[in-house]
Length: 532
Image (cartoon, rainbow, N blue to C red; front, top):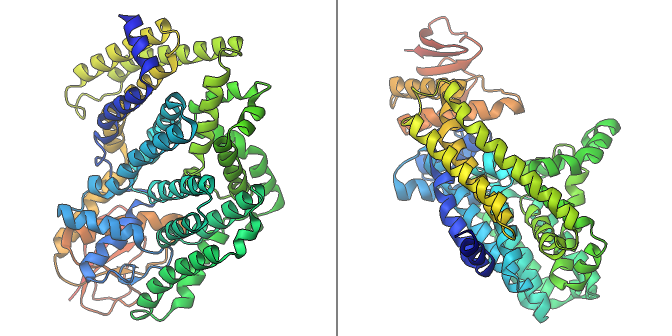
């Protein structure tokens, strides 16, 4: 039985990949909408919701005031999900990020399978995108823009290589610049940086740098600018403050650079950066062990695709390496490039590095045992009242993880595939057990209920957020309140510094100055007032 399973896993890596994709749907989608919006999610949700409420999809706003930080492409997509489903739930808010996550993995698989003609490397590198630590328990449950944006950017990388191989210069430039226009309309200036650095390095390496001055490149660049310009022209019809919009977009990109920080902080970041990101993508980073073979660099040089992705990685990574405020989600389009290199090293050198392979197998077996042994500890976390069928779920998870641990021990060639299965079980445990625990112990749950209650009390009457001046770290919290209030009443909340107008006001850590203000209700550090 074990041998038949081994034969299947070795013989059909493509089928195994898609089987793992199907099996991963439940772990990633169960309880996806359970937690209140947090981090940058409410900002994206607010812009999309206010587009619908104002019936104006040209001008992003929050609290009926212009929002300049990001162009609106992702918000258009999110608004489309809201309109198609007729709901503004957390689950729907996260779908435009989660669906591209699976499309991203599938894109990695097909690209690597096509260019390297090795479905083992394609399958492993693609599935590692789903089960690296950062994606497994954080980014995959957030409605952030970065997965969608990174997927488009990665596709641009792959298309550049495809057309480079065929010497189809017009298609190389034109399609990559169309994607650049789209990604710019999603996130702004980083798209120009990715496109520029990638083209310069690749054309220089391939001895085609003069193509930067070709009509194909110039026409494609102009097309990109025309698409971006058409958006800003339309925007100008509603808000002539283009200077404020563009300066904010510039500030959003430039403020994270090393020039904004002291030498010591920047130096510490430069030193710790690679180790930090090795930790973020653990346990995928365990494959680094196989990159220490003496032929690793030579093997990359022998395969044009591996050379290409190495150059793309090196061309772009330094921007983030030198930026102290870089967040892991900004590198999602670059992570798959190293996953491909690591997967290549694993399948190319594991037999030659027999001792390293033995150590690797022992590490994943130890991790599997640790996961299996840890699962029954969930009985001690008072989950009975918040997790339905708790005992059945824990027993199921324990049996499944134990069975997979046994497979990791017994399989010879496919231990890593079984280990990936264990990581999916770990994510299922996270979705079933950890997310309800967080919901029950998070202050976000209280504030969501408070915001919904305020929206219900006020209804369609005028509603204002008084003296809205949060620090940058407080913006997600305030945006979350605004989203749930607006979602409840389906009318905009407006920022104000004037408390003389009739209506309802909510405040954060302050009172109204108007002596006629009536306190309706307090919610910890929030207060709801009425002025008649």
